[in-house]
Image (cartoon, one colour):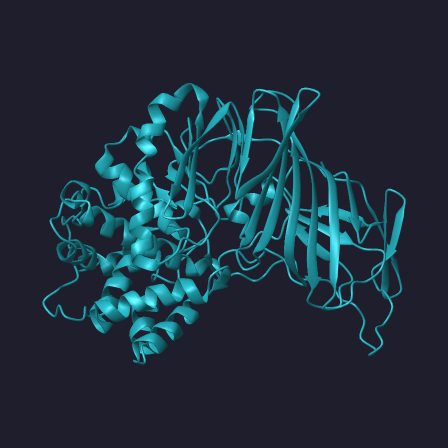
Length: 526
């Protein structure tokens, strides 16, 4: 994600009845009666509920315990040509139980749920806040595959808001999804944490004249009775926060294949002539990124532009999302931002964070390649107000203590507020600064090897900051644990290798002093 204006300035419940019966609990719902106690297993163990959250440091209740999702088969129906309409859906989730499960949760904050089946049998459920708590008729054995189908769920899109997270968003031309970090479950029930990636089939039904586009490759489309049904398949595991479903009066434009990567863009039909030429630089950005870190990790790539004010650009998997504000900016800004979002396909999408405190891995790397692209295309002076990357990182370094005090260490944001705490300047520029320090420590050749090995070893997986530290140490042949721990978790900015003359501005700043700023280095994007 890349934040825009704000950060530029800084640089229907279903009734239920619970009846206690001894140590068991009976849940009555719409005629389904289930005992949550369940029989003992052959080993004598009794089933237990899955946790209502994964215990993420910043979002403790995001995601759920007790199972690992393998695949989502998601169907969404858009009844009419109305961006504000309520959408209905059906999702079948294939998962593996990681414990002997008496019940389990899905994340869901949408409008309503119709019915739930587990392994083909009706299951009881209750809504509890943003949790959909499901109790199957029979407990689910550990290490066994199961399916859960949630039918008749409903969700209503919201207005885009540049001052808050977005989610399921309406625009003048249709609806899109901007789910990072915790908004995907506003559209459909899921295990909403990047630690649990899964493959997706997305089936979209909409009126003729509208277009439905989603992550991955379109595998079929058919028209019947005034409706169009489009099916997309994302075969690479994807975090729920990266889902994209764009439905409306959009046009899809193919740019052909670029170094083996099929490229397609999606824009409002009425703005196509204006917007499509401005997206053309993605062809150069793809060549640049593959030269740096290797083969593109997914089936295709492209850009989705909407006529709304999101306040950020976002790396939804295989189809990066921008609003028209970005497309009003000059090329020397738009193109490095495009490189930032493309870099996320490797850093953040293919290799997802294990928990949200690891988001510096996404944003620090994307910012690194954003600046590299600005340098290599000759626009760094206009973009960042400096002539070279050494001066750029020296200026970022000077603000190190200030940003650590305000926002927390690079790998430990202080709070979960999206705008200023999770996606903060010390995650973006501070994350890129950590990478600069690492390059200075191990040399450019070893650094490049670390980057390529990281995206290769953890492709299609979720990885932690600890994983990055261990890999960097292994590839470099140096024990970098203390070095990177200081840079990533320290409350003070460490000395910069190779630059003993670099200094950090005093913080708190002396009375009357103002922190220095770089003209164009703080436009933050997810």
